[in-house]
Image (cartoon, rainbow, N blue to C red; front, side):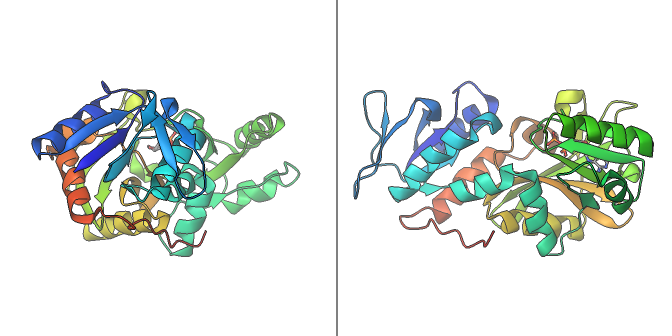
Length: 301
Ligand code: ADP
């Protein structure tokens, strides 16, 4: 098969591993910088142009779209979809998952466990918002944040109100959430491909840090999931319409709760901690599922 990895740089760990895994399995793999693609949006004959010529003959693309390039990256993925090229994740599913609020709304509709969360535009009703999620301690999140930046733990109602007011004063969109103290600064990343969790890891923040992000100094280790955690992860990926996803779960007193569903989950941490060749599993999934006309998103929302 001829497969393109849509990625900014061939040297990134995940990109490199996907290329290697595809080549080992006999495929023709290319890394395409999606920001360097330009598109011909003509009736009947959509094309993606790259380095002076059209990209032709691809069976599948693996989108690895960075959070800050979602708009353009997704336009490129959509253009491949128009050309009947199979994407591991569809453009619609990627945009859906990039919106944290939309993500939680879709998950809640299916009854998937979530931290009690609130969202408001006006600061006139801050008391109501804070009470609704059970009062302090609570977590305040910038909707546009990644890698734990913009995730704040407020210990008192007054601190929470001040932070909410400050963010809203800057016109930032925020989410207010029940603090899952019992998670103890750890979370679980479940790597979902199709309808299976193929690998998982537990991430633990450094002492005194409630955020488990590796970028914030956290560490990762292998973990065994409960059947409920497995099914929560698979249902969450499905709810977003993602075929490849990283689902982040916290272990709460009321069962697993989902933090986030990531459409371009990194391979480095998870392959290292779990010992699973996740890249090869993604390629195997493409072998089994890619084909013209397999682009069909049926999520309403
Ligand atoms: P990001 O997308 O920036 O990584 P997250 O929402 O995943 O932001 O939050 C970062 C980390 O903070 C999570 O991995 C988790 O460890 C911790 N965290 C987030 N929300 C909560 C919460 N409601 N209760 C307890 N810990 C949380």
